[in-house]
Image (cartoon, rainbow, N blue to C red):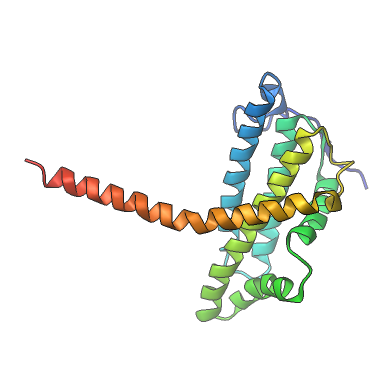
Length: 202
């Protein structure tokens, strides 16, 4: 039962500027910005993993994405990473992010399992799982940015200490998600009108 522990700055990182050795020269603000962009990117990947049409495989894929995000955040902040500890922390934090209410817990499980029904089940699952997956990944990432930035490690992480922060991040993600479609359609309208202006020119 050996735990895999890797130090900060592993050579296997493919994203320049995010390994521990590359971020040591960064200011705290620059490090937080890099970490925030990483969380945004992994939230999108998590939403994409939620689209996997096979029940329960989507949940496993989202967990893998979240674990990789935690590994990369550990590298950015120079915090030693343990895969076994990371898995248990993500599982406990996911319980805090997704309230233990019957309705929400049922919605996540049903969102995945409903994909086993051809047609309508796949469509319903394709709508619910990406939203839950991206939201949970976003909140988990923001919690760890806060924790690592304040000098915390995986060993001293305690999810109940972040209840209020989790609540605020969930509200921020919900507001951000609600604003995204309208800003996307506005940019599409601007793009279409500029193309129209370009084609109707002299």
